[in-house]
Amino acid sequence: MNALTGGGIVGAGFGGGGVAIIIWILIFFGIFYFLAIRPQRRQKQQHQEMVTMLKKGDEVVTIGGMFGTITGIGDDWIELEVAKRTRVRYLKRAISSITSINEDEDEDEYIEAEDDDVSEEAGTDAGELEASAAGEATPDAPAPPEEPKA
Image (cartoon, rainbow, N blue to C red; front, side):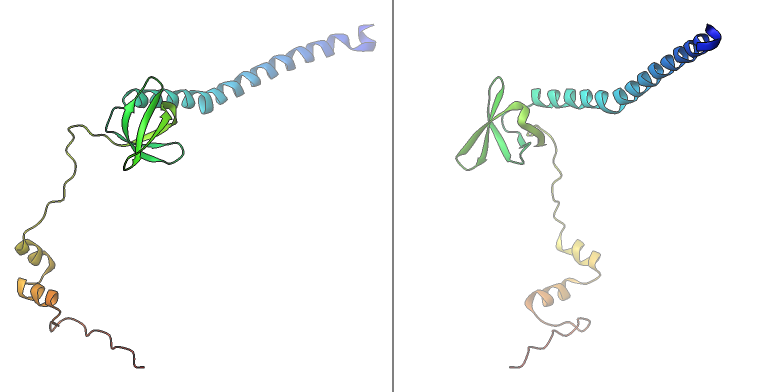
């Protein structure tokens, strides 16, 4: 009867194919885990850390794109000042990012150069700069465009 139905041959082939399918499903689940689930967990953890670091005076952006300065903090909400005397309450999880942190950080300040330094860098002397500021033409400067005739 085995010769007629081929039961021994069919059964052996089906069992090997089932194991291969299970292995492929596990491989795809592993790939999905490393490409989707794990990065999302890491991003959620980083966002949770950022939310716990919020304090009064921080400038933040909400997930809706609203910029504001934190004026009050509750258990699960914050109060933002979005304009002068305009305050809005948001859930903490609605904060997208901190745009600036008001700590004792050294901000990049604009350092003004002295007039002598500017004129040396530009390749002109102070007299030419004063003449151009006064509206006088210098010998190397191009002529201003003519006014249109009516």
